Length: 150
Image 1 (cartoon, helix red, strand yellow):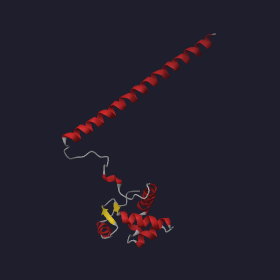
Image 2 (cartoon, rainbow, N blue to C red; image 1 turned 120 degrees about the vertical axis):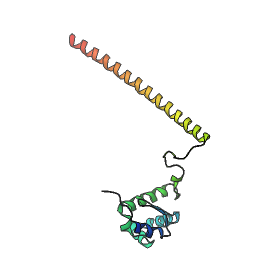
Image 3 (cartoon, one colour; image 1 turned 180 degrees about the vertical axis):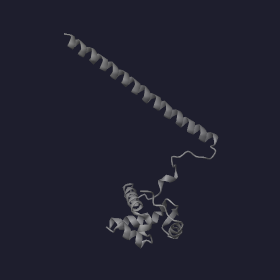
Image 4 (cartoon, rainbow, N blue to C red; image 1 turned 60 degrees about the vertical axis):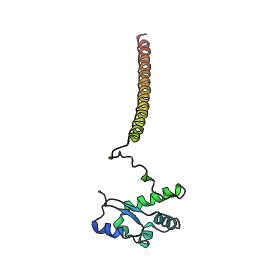
């Protein structure tokens, strides 16, 4: 089962909806106002497809998965105390393709050094624990072989 991509016509239709902040072939970003209204109506027990229809969306165009994911996100916003802002704006987790300033490069390298030091400490601990487990295993093997000799 593949992704539900929007056609060019569907994108144009969605862009005209006042509750759409941004839309691409793969994704749709809703306005904060829409998220608040949707949340209130959903809490009142109204089904998601009815809410979407009332607010100018065709549930068939969006698709079941996208609707379910949106409902899940609305519930997550509620658990955050009703903060409906998109928090992804700060960092997507991807490396930037633009040239970094000297300060940004230094900060990135400092972070990388810190990460590598933590990774080295972890590997040292794992190596030590592995060595201890091998020694314990060998001691138990010697004990067991002596008990068979008697």
